[in-house]
Figure 1 (cartoon, rainbow, N blue to C red):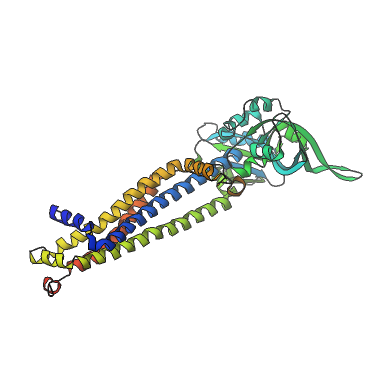
Figure 2 (cartoon, one colour):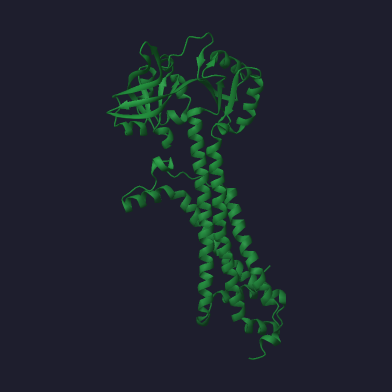
Length: 423
């Protein structure tokens, strides 16, 4: 598309002479603006993708992909429900695991400190099938949990209570027992047999795991034929099929007093907020690239005015309007391509090492940047989507190209006689 003389002149025009130094400064700022815009856009999209994936993994790691609740506080006939679902998917390949769950709100107390917490009661064999939790357990926690006499506490909750593994923690349930003096809260102490850390403050600082049978006794669930639980949760082999499987289970249980919710519906408010935030950030950061594109326009217009005499000489020597147009198009596009290429490299490096950079800055200033109880995360996870990176590159290149059209057209429209009249 561009022949050698056009490339030679385009790159020579980009190296401004001393009297054109201001043009060179504007060009440098144009390259810098596009670099920062592209790098920041890639970094922010990668960070938002990583946060969404991390939160998804944590929510699913605790609650499963699909949760079935009863019409009232408890789900009656939970074991019959398990059998019914297992019968539908007995060929395998759809459900990875399913189990009963008992949950309840309690007040936990130790060392004179009291905090609210959520108790989740699971069978020990099901804990092993929850890889996110199983991988985060402290050493020996699962073996002690199997004995059925202790609880596993989130690392943040343990720290806030000033406890150590092996020490007792007191649980106070508002659903107490009725006496002649009124309702007395249910109070019982359990030894802490281990900890888990998912890296999400809202879970690590407010959840504790209790053996299923002990949870049933503690919350005084009645003996019911067919089993009783707070919910039944299902983990799928293929998480992307959650909507389809949820609809199948709803049809299977149609007419029965059950509510079937997938993880997207349960946490809809959180992920909707993240999605809105990501879109707003993309729009705001895209404006940086747009501003840089306007800088390209201004620098090229000034370059065209400074090179009016040279353009006129080229035209008088036989250069066509198309040749002049292509020279200045190439000059402007080179600015955009340099900024885009540099921005992509910086953005990908920043996304790969953002958490290391955070740790370095925290050591440098001597205080934390990522405060868990405010930002709910203990690390900065990133996930770079090649499609999004390609979209950012396409946006930067397109804006750079569009910004060169008017200055290049103006240069091509110069008449040699007009430009050389006073020379």
